[in-house]
Length: 294
Image (cartoon, rainbow, N blue to C red; front, side, top):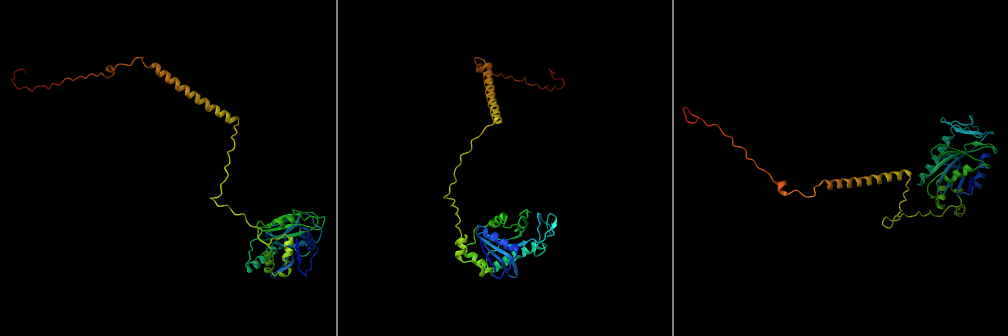
């Protein structure tokens, strides 16, 4: 990784060890150490093909080991003991890092550049032989804490290679333009140095999506159906029910044939009908007095 340090910078012991870690990384990137962006002094600004991260480097005043914890009130502790930094107290460290990230974003926006892929991290450099865990802790969205030194810089390398999941948009020209936008053009390497460090001259071409009319999705054969013991039993039950139904139908047909007479009845017997006339109702005759037959 390329490292550029401000000429008049006075680095602390932790910052010098941090620089040694960066120079040992084979990753593609440019680290601008001890730089000023606007009115803020930043420990380092690291530019990779996928984004920018602002880093604050802090060392320890004494040997402290144990479990690192960051409280909601901003207090940093190691195994329930206050974090003892060599330069300044840990209180407000998260806010200072966030202000540094904000300063970089504002500088990029003023230069009409994209400021979305800007993150931040605090790198704690313990004494060699001292173990501080966890080696990475999240502070806020986009802000992390890393523990690294020349003996164990694994987490720092993983962070720098993957802190941003964006596309590889930082080409050689964009890196140089970013340095100019941050007011760090004097620290910008040449195009040849950036190319040797692994930066690309142009953005990699994205694979075009084929047109819907020309694209035919492969027809996948359905997977073979595997019948288990339970499925076999269900199949046998269905088959037995079907056979039983056929037998019942045959028996009913045979019984219907046996019940019919061998000779059909004549039509005259089945169609003959008798008609009976109802007797007429006789109404009584009206009789007059002294009429014969009444």
